[in-house]
Image (cartoon, rainbow, N blue to C red; front, side, top):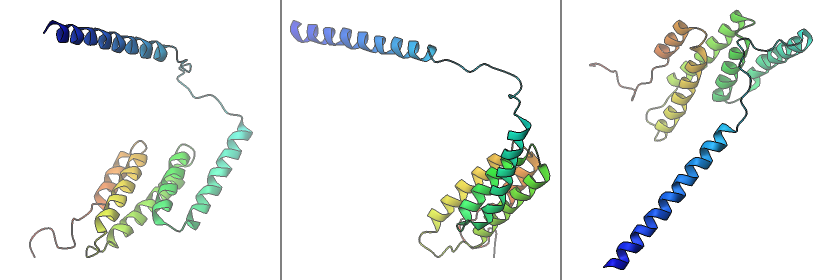
Length: 162
């Protein structure tokens, strides 16, 4: 009976030592990672570079309409709007509203008799979450409005009565 106990004790000691070493190594590795300097302001860009970047984003916003899949259009419009918000809030709002309209159209086009409707609802829910999370840092009221406009029904029957 003494041998199995001694073997078990030895195994526990070695495993405990190995786990302890792994934790120390991970802690040392994490502290060795260089951190970027913290600054309160983003670095200033060259005005020429900034103009080129804005022109590129504007070009992207125009080409978004050429995407065939509405889920891709919604995602691209919301990303471009997020990028444009600081420079052109009105244009960004227009893009967010267009993405919201497309998402609302997807919801209204759901066919609840289709056996794959729940997969489509899951994709729509993901797009909805992504859109609202992009809108929220810029305009909380618009984000709440987006949530209200894009509510999903579980089926096509009226929710109350009827």
